[in-house]
Image 1 (spheres, rainbow, N blue to C red):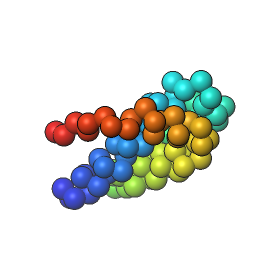
Image 2 (image 1 turned 180 degrees about the horizontal axis):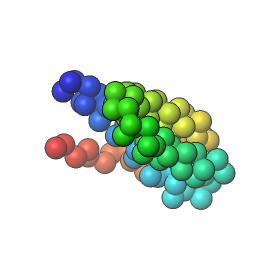
Image 3 (image 1 turned 60 degrees about the vertical axis):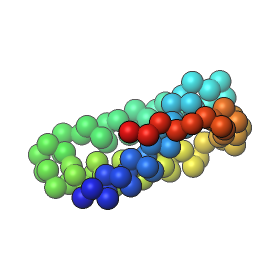
Image 4 (image 1 turned 45 degrees about the horizontal axis):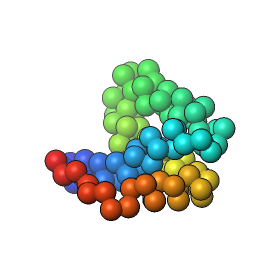
Length: 94
């Protein structure tokens, strides 16, 4: 279980940084904000509370996969700007 959390943190952590950058970028695609609203609804849907097993699968598998897919669909100029702005920055370790 500890390995799953570490993997989720590593994969989703980079995607979350890119997401935060893309939201504030002036050339973000028009689908990004509605897509994030849908992802937020997926993360807190009532089915998570009614069927706990599905909620766990949802939180640890589906949400990171959808998030990663959305980040793969970002335009190249947004991703390049992100790469340029984060080059050479030391990563925080916790």
